[in-house]
Length: 329
Image (tube, rainbow, N blue to C red; front, side, top):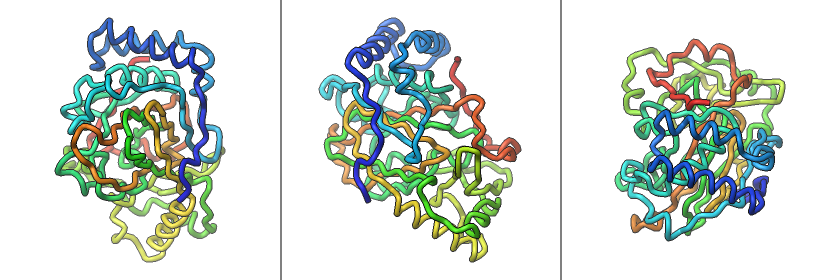
């Protein structure tokens, strides 16, 4: 798997300083990064005042790679404190970065949160957690986090995913694979474009997993004017319920995604921006120490208003009872 093959958009020092200073000013005025309405209004107002350089850096993903790394921001490794033992104990650690991500997300679109995940926070802390090592969630460590579409089970999932690196002493790689780079024959594309199987909620959504409604069957692939897109999460797709020809086509898609996958080892201050309709992402296994020095990312999710990259039939899905919270814009 190639390492580090991701387009980079470099912020110059004055631009990085501008963004950081605004984030710190908001934090000083509100005393916390907890995303209450008045703070979100301030973020939205401040985002409109950001310079053209930041807006250009936040322009839509424009290559078949389906992602880019925004570079030039910095992290004070000592100042952010130890890596939290779980998202639930993170509190306001590295809170200025919550606001940096919210500002960037607001330039790109509408930041969203989920009522059923991390207590409705708009910025999530992604850290390894004891007892979750083998799960297919961001809290795992010892297993390969399978490539997947973020929140694939839900029709209101993000269009863009932002992953900001706070700490990564062990150069643990995020994996990414673009549907725009795979090679599939027409028969496989046709099969995978049919709504044959559901995608079930992942382990991070306890309430959704007990939802009583019938799981909707959804297509894995579909075509747009810009090119193919996908909705993919094999760890939560009941593939054994599908006909043999569909399973074989799905296996060939999986093999192709593996073939074109790249491994991006983020450095502190890097922000990986992923087009969630084009790219599936995951993470290589690693051994967590739980000593305050483990890998630590922050994650924000963005909807892009007016974007037409998904089947209209998604509007009829129940979303397993989960509701997205949309930040004020």
